Amino acid sequence: MISRLLVANRGEIACRVFRTCRDLGVSTVAVYSDADAGALHVREADAAVRLPGAAPSETYLRGDLIVKAALAAGADAVHPGYGFLSENADFARTVIDAGLVWIGPPPAAIEAMASKTRAKELLGIEPLDPARVAESDLPVLVKAAAGGGGRGMRIVRELPELAGELESASAEAASAFGDGEVFVEPYVEDGRHVEVQLLCDAHGTVWALGTRDCSLQRRHQKVIEEAPAPGLPAALEASLLDTAVRAAKAVGYVGAGTVEFLVADGRAHFLEMNTRLQVEHPVTEEVYGVDLVALQLAVAEGAKLPPETPAPRGHAIEARLYAEDPARGWAPQTGALRLFDVPGGVRLDTGYASGDAIGVHYDPMIAKLTVHAPTRDGAVRKLARALERTRIHGPVTNRDLLVASLRHPEYATADRLDTGFYDRNLPALTTAPGGGDLAAVAAALAAASARRGRFGGGWRNLRSQDETRTYGGTGGDHEVRYRPTRDGGYEVTAPEGVRVVAATPDRVSLEAAGVVRHFDVTAYEDGTVHVGPHRLTARPRFTDPREQTAPGSLLAPMPGTVVRVADGLAVGDAVTAGQPLLWLEAMKMEHRVTAPASGTLTALHAAPGRQVEVGALLAVVQTEERPEAQS
Image (cartoon, rainbow, N blue to C red):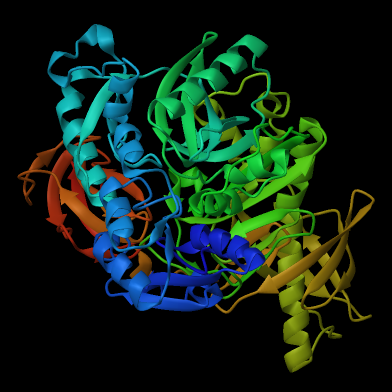
């Protein structure tokens, strides 16, 4: 029997495994990098071991250090989570050779399936030869042979781009997974991403726990997942389940695993088998009423699964809440998570709590919110409302995008579920939510009430001009004008048609068009104000001239590390619009910085390995057409 378990991962992944361990009475051990010293998974573990450093290659990818940590902490088993080393056969062997119980499939099965190229060969599917890719083969997908999560993946639509994308994908894969092998396969436009959850014991029993649809993706990473996959023809669904079971039996699979497919034109194209638990496993757990982590531990202890797969019930949907700005190329965000509060009735899987900091070193996912309901319609409505009511103060997140996605007709009716959803709909989905003007009024009056409470003051016999406050939000700037009234209240003069019902420093009630609405207001010292679901920024009355930058300045869109500068690039070079100049990496994403226009590179402040903050000056491109000087 397992008595003490080490999780070779971090954040939400480790917290999820620890939760089951507590239920089972199993003691837990965490490992952590220096960047994670105060992280939630460290606080929740019974013991924790430091891995010196911050980069994954120095810490969470060091299997030798993790095994030493397990032995030092007295663990008798290691769970790899669902990232980093979870599909590394050498790590699995190291764990087993150290006399520890490995919570995962046999190393031979990992080797057979963890490499996408070898998995395809096992099923008789040949990847494309990069040297023989022709125009007629386009578009193609360059893909990392190891790992997942969209790392080391590139879509190529123009043949001259292939060589560069192969190099870039290989470098990213090597950094993320310690393996730079990449391959090329046909890219299926706008297919559905459907997968089958497997659970196998060492006695030959294989459970196929239904399907999941994971088609809503950005940067090849999943955003919203659900089970079961809606609208699949019965014959196609049966074929998916059968293929998944055959793949597991072919390699003597044991433990939890997932077989992924791309479904297009009524046909299923095999993508890969992930020899681990998936991030989206909660939707399967909710539908089948099982704890997959508990079953993983039981199988590792030698237990035999019941011969019959559990019966499904209802529908479950999961949304991934990211610290990122979808309207700015999904740029990851960092900073203090000042408040994080999710309403009841929602399953929450997270590695963060109020007061924690979101840093630059790892994935920007804050949490997963999962709901279950008797019907898909009910689950869609329940999750959208829960996200709307979630209070999250701090960095910009994708919360509004998730709500809009769930309520978009293509998703809500399941009429058009495919991986092109965000390519088609992103501009509409990132339109500012309504109510920004009223939210700004609430912010201004809450601030006025706070000042009145601290300093007194209010209505005067000789009335001065209106007070003016401006707030920036996702919909642009909102100007508010108001004046105090004789009875201690406020009169709003802009925007028009707003009557103040009540105003305190943390709650404001306003009437507009005959409807009274209540706004909870929280203001922070940096000028950020959260009003219900709205995140506003108080604008200064006067612009600081030091904040102005020269025309053509390229500023870091996110905090991160400069991983590459274009070969031979130097100050004085002529560059063309759209030419890649350098690459930033932050929070499991690589961002390409390109020339905004044709011109001359007059400054270059970026160098490989340099850490930059958001807004840091990276380079300056002086355009060929200079604007006329203003008198």
